[in-house]
Length: 162
Ligand SMILES: CC(C)(COP(=O)(O)OP(=O)(O)OC[C@H]1O[C@@H](n2cnc3c(N)ncnc32)[C@H](O)[C@@H]1OP(=O)(O)O)[C@@H](O)C(=O)NCCC(=O)NCCS
Image (cartoon, rainbow, N blue to C red; front, side, top):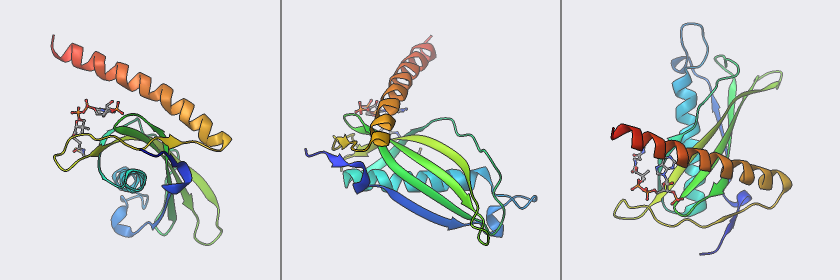
């Protein structure tokens, strides 16, 4: 299977914060940001694989600043790393003041998606080809995170059988 460049599947998604997305303080619910992250990452994974995908895991998610009603939320998703049937998608979330244009970092998230065949079984994904320095750095870091995840999942399943 032919590899694919990171730029060929990148997703840029822009949302506006509506009153229904916010808590009584007028700032966005974490769950709404979480949903947008999952959607942006899923579109990126589908673009990379041109197949159905499922979210296998989402790493810890820290919200760095609140986002108010009327602000824009910008989500940038790209493939950081590919395994055999899975891939790590990184999503950067920023808020933009609609009038001043001030941009702030809201969250960064790493998600693992698995490509699924017509029987719901994992299927091979095209290798991602990091080209720029930043893409190569992200690839290396994602590879390390994957090693931790595999070890963590192994420990978890060993403990659950005790
Ligand atoms: C994700 C899922 C397809 C994995 O199926 P599985 O039979 O356990 O598959 P495997 O053990 O062969 O793993 C397939 C790949 O997924 C990765 N993987 C599996 N579970 C994972 C997890 N919890 N976190 C990160 N990666 C995971 C494996 O490392 C493997 O990657 P690789 O092929 O690149 O080496 C399956 O658990 C599933 O369907 N889960 C539900 C997904 C879903 O519905 N998500 C929406 C929210 S509920």
